[in-house]
Amino acid sequence: MSRIDFYLDSLKMLKNQWRYQIKYLVADGYYSKEKFVNGILDLNLHQIGKLRHDANMRYLYTGKQKKYGAKRKYDGKVKLTDLKKLTFVKEVAPNISLYTAVVNHVTLKRNIRIAYLVDRRDPQKIRTALLFSTDTEIDALEIYCYYKARFQIEFIFRDAKQFTGLAHCQARDAAKLDFHFNASLTALNIAKLEQHTAHKNVSPFVFSMASSKRLAFIQHLLETFISKLGLDPIVIKNHPEYEELLSYGSISA
Image (cartoon, rainbow, N blue to C red; front, top):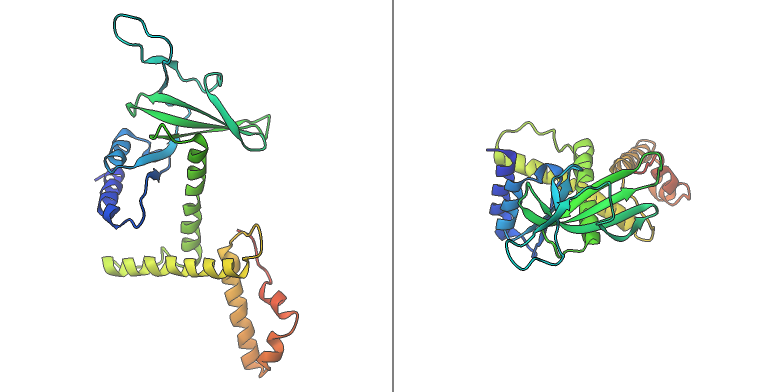
């Protein structure tokens, strides 16, 4: 079973457990393949993903059709170096432009909406990203926002692996592994909740699991000092410098 088969089967099993009505599934460029896209569409979902810059795409012909014979479908190959046939949407950030069009993807064998980002912040090195959705009616800005939000999952796995032992379980039993993974991610969620609650009036607030773990360590260390040295915890914790000691060494994500 390939990775694509595995994830499609997992989605089929989980579909009836989704609590809310879901319309889009966001995946990285590896899953921008006909087999996976067709599987997602069979689940009554639309896929949002990333394409290679040399993806084989064709513009749709929207001009006047000839009276007789086969109708003309396409209007030439998409060349991303020429932005004239793309529709400018807006600047999503200073010097980062978003363009869009509905085109035909030859390999996926369907029409898609593309969202093409051009980053001109460094004139010497212009960067680009080609996103797409199988839903041709979706707004290009939504494609950009959905795909940008997808990357947050990378931080979840990074923090869980580095700080809450996601990959440290040596069990082989499925139930034990399931418990371990849930415990690791739950610990991460509790830390996030505590940090966001403590900084609810701070905007913008950047969560750092490293800072959260350091806070817990320093808090435990101070409690140990208070206990071992026979200090009055009320006096120590009411001292104006106590909070500063707790945040000693905190870093940003």
